[in-house]
Length: 151
Length: 151
DNA sequence: TCCTTTGTTTTGACACAGTCAAAACAAGCG
DNA sequence: CGCTTGTTTTGACTGTGTCAAAACAAAGGA
Image (cartoon, each protein chain N blue to C red):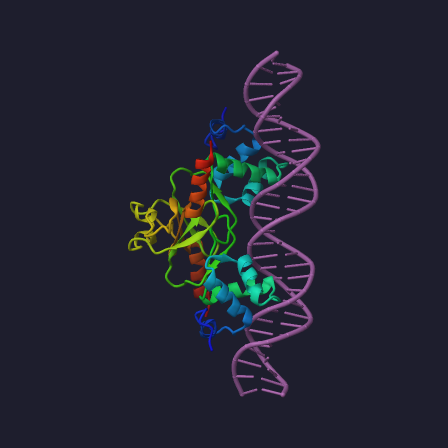
């Protein structure tokens, strides 16, 4: 019986022309469970089921998945690279300035404006990446608590 | 007589409540000359006039300038942090996917759409950062040359 | 002008994220 | 089953940046 927890990682890998290995399946499962994870978090999650997995193997897999278009890498300023399986829809992200939490943001109103800079300085434009910055609800709650607790 | 090469770095520093030192003035001059420079490039430039300057001093100054609002730090994915003196107008950037060159892009058509994500997942939104990716004219030229030279 | 205070710079060790390369290993195919 | 080729392991290494203590210098007052 096939694991339904992951969106049939094996099939995804085969379609992308990548060999199906335990490490790769486990990394995909980890990303399905915890989107916007960094290599370290993935290593930790993978080690839970495959304790002998090396850090390097996870880095390899994450690179391979990104190169094959099965995963997308984002790199908000001040954070290590994060990976997610949601690909192909060029959605955006909102990042917490305090704790670094990341959430998805669907593309903005018709998204045309974001793809059309006023001048391109001679560049051939390939894509536009939008990152929103703010404070997540958890951190907001903490701030309020602090204010309330202050004398 | 006052150096007119830099936009009176000393005055900027004093207004920001920072002491005026050779290192700081030299870093500001470097950034005025070469916007979107990383720490390494700034170190190299500063060493040209102040050969005894330490790498750490440049990092300190760059951090101080950014903290004081005299410089802005950007960090395109896959590159070290870059600094520029153009602050306060929240302009955007276009980055070359091949060579990493960076150019300024003034804020997009009315900029309202980019500041209004469809859902904020409970975040308090502070700002929106847009990064355009493409190929700069230099790299474009190289590609054409390669194609022409190919057969 | 010289002294004092406080902020800056130097020096050198260190941390983190990630890459490189070679040897051991295993998936997929005939 | 065994080959071939791609994957994983191991361990050293790089680049970017931070930390901390001692040496030093800018600003302001005596």
